[in-house]
Length: 185
Image 1 (tube, rainbow, N blue to C red):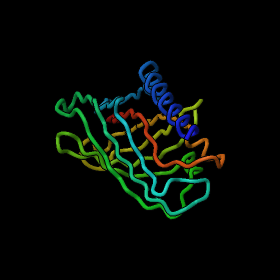
Image 2: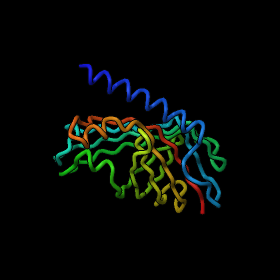
Image 3: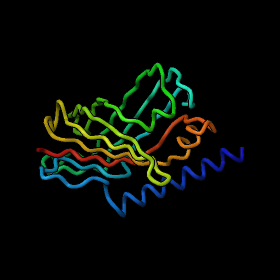
C-alpha cells in the first residue's frame, strides 16, 4: 500500500512538473518555416490504458488511447477550438520496454467543427529526467489540413515505466500532457 501511495504521489508530482515545464519552456520543437494551421496546448492530454497492465514480459495487450485537444487556435479556421482522437488496438506481444521505443501510427482527430484530420506519424520515446517524452512527426494524410506537417509532443511522469522496466511493477495506464502543431508547408 505504501509503494502504491508513493507511486501516486510521484506521478502527481511529475504531472505538475511536466505541466510547468511545458508552460515555461513551451513546446520542445523548433518553429517551422510554414504557416501554422492549428496549435493545441495543455491542458490538451492523452490517456492510455493497457489491459492487462504492461509487465517486463511481452504479452497480448489491448491498448486504448484517448486524446483531448484544447485549447486550440487556428487562424485559417477560427471556429476550430478543440478536438479528440480515440484509438484501440490489440498488440500480440507488448511489454513496458516497448514504451521506450520508436514506431509509426495513424489516427484521426475529430475537431469540434465536425471536420476530421487523419494523421500518419513516426514516434520516438525517451526519458528526460523523470519525464517520459514521446515525440510524433508526420503529415495529415486526409481531411482538414491535408498535406500539412504534424508535430505532437506528449509529456508525463516516467515513474511506472521505469519501475516496470526494472521488473518492480506494472504499467496499467499513462496520462500525458499534449502539445500539437499542424503546419502548412
